[in-house]
Image 1 (cartoon, rainbow, N blue to C red):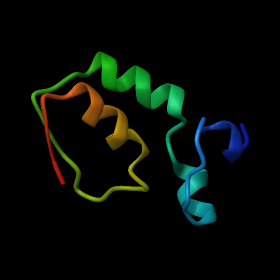
Image 2: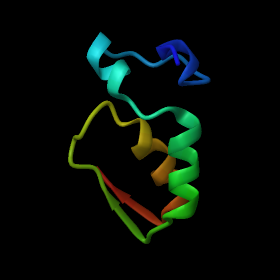
Image 3: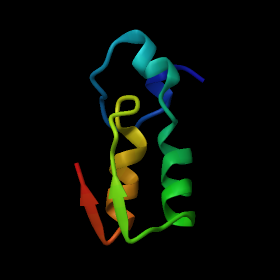
Length: 62
């Protein structure tokens, strides 16, 4: 899978950030399956999964 195939919208990051980022389809699946009440982003990676968890969780904390 190429980095451009991982996301439906453009993502701005360096090469390694994009290389190790979770593909959007996987992030969406995980977020729906692992819904939570509170999400805390501790700055791991480029934040791709955080976006989808934030859409599913009741409250997000940066």
